[in-house]
Length: 66
Image (cartoon, rainbow, N blue to C red; front, side, top):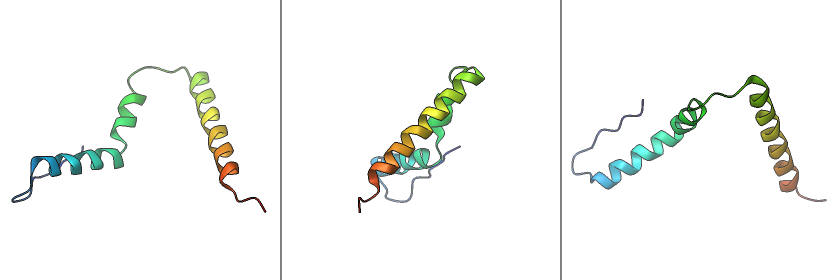
């Protein structure tokens, strides 16, 4: 659970910005989306493979051409 305590003299905007950063670092939003609906095991596997293909294509594009 992400928790941010407001420091003395800190504005609400700065505290909110720190909170959002902390939530993003802890992947809380990703976990909530992951558990918001059920995926069949086969569908989960297909999505995982698709993400792996996407990452590998991106990695190949970033490699410098010699």
